[in-house]
Image (tube, rainbow, N blue to C red; front, top):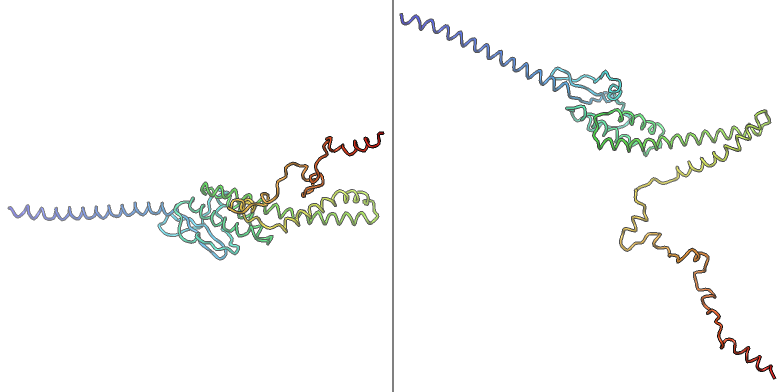
Length: 291
């Protein structure tokens, strides 16, 4: 009789152990699924840059734990900001080093790349490379996640690009105005019903063309400014060295400009003084003539 309960307890104990094992497996699987979902969501927020031929593609992490897909946002402004970037002889640099955990990190890395590419084009004389500065600046302006320091750098880049574009348009305007003046001169010299009007236009635009041409030539021949501090100011700060303004003699008053530097006759001869001694020879002659 005592052996029956013992035999009944053994199957119930093994069944409980089986249930506990199944529950443990289910818990482990559930935890694995939770970890997989969390990792998938974190991965879906990461970004990366991949080079495909001569283009850089912006990629965004998928919901699956591995893999990236081209980033194609619905917003047109974001779509333009993260469109494929055409390489024009530059190296991607840090953009291909790894993934970016946030979009702000991606924006800051893209801005550093755009800024370095822009700086290389400012000293170029190629019109095509100068035109590329405008396109790169527009791409840089679309990046909303750049830092405050980079926003100040963006303002400087805007000023530089404005100067480069203004210089290019000034050159084009000088060429167009010069050609227009030549055409007006031709129309003025050949007798026709527009000769008088062409003569008036030529007289009014020819001086402008000459003045603009001189300005453009001066800009082309001007050397770039190497330092914001003038050389005279820098040399004045060095001990034992005077600037050009300090080396020039100081004038006592504006009238010194018209006077000779050496002592003149007025300074060599003393002024006449009315005294008895100066008039004594004449008085002696008068006394001699008197009886």
